[in-house]
Length: 94
Image 1 (cartoon, rainbow, N blue to C red):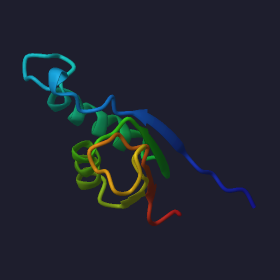
Image 2 (image 1 turned 30 degrees about the vertical axis):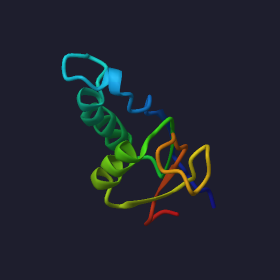
Image 3 (image 1 turned 180 degrees about the vertical axis):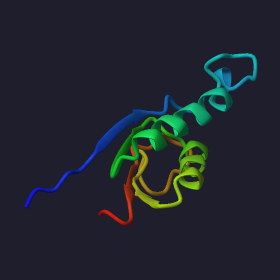
Image 4 (image 1 turned 30 degrees about the horizontal axis):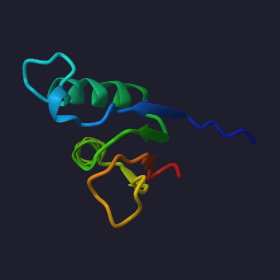
């Protein structure tokens, strides 16, 4: 029996205030829909994210209702203002 698992890694490029102005082509607001579109087009069973902050991870979770996630920030469980390297997984397949 063979099992196929698709894994994707995605750098969210943190949510920096300087890049978040609506005039910047790299603003989170301009990137977030594209990020979600790329992720859903591949439908990975496991999605590993880097440099995500809470607002980005919450947006992804809303757009990926069949997934759950886990992870911790670089500063631990007590600090929710830092970057995370969360792993999302498809609840039906894992």
